[in-house]
Length: 146
Image: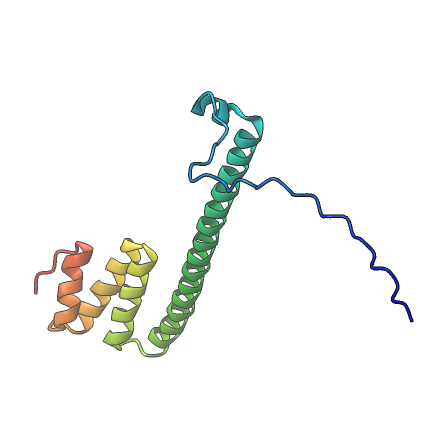
């Protein structure tokens, strides 16, 4: 038996050797930094980022202000409730010096110095030796002479 003749294959073409990239890459040159900055996309992006940051900071500031306002309103409501309570106590117990002293302190916290002076006078009429009341009378600007 005869062997079939071997097929002859064509030789593969020889490819030219590829050059490896050099260490020094070539970057496209920009004429100037001014061209980059004048690029409309850069300007729009920068302005957008600036507005976002500004709005975020403004939102944080607003949130802090609102929480402070809420806290102050809560404190004011608490002081108002205490004033009502101590007014009831002093109407029931006319000679209770601590009630009048507490009312003087609360009115001072409210910012009403005139009412505070009235209550501190009443406190000192009941007990002229009450040291805390004497000190507070000086704070309110009430001249006290025993």
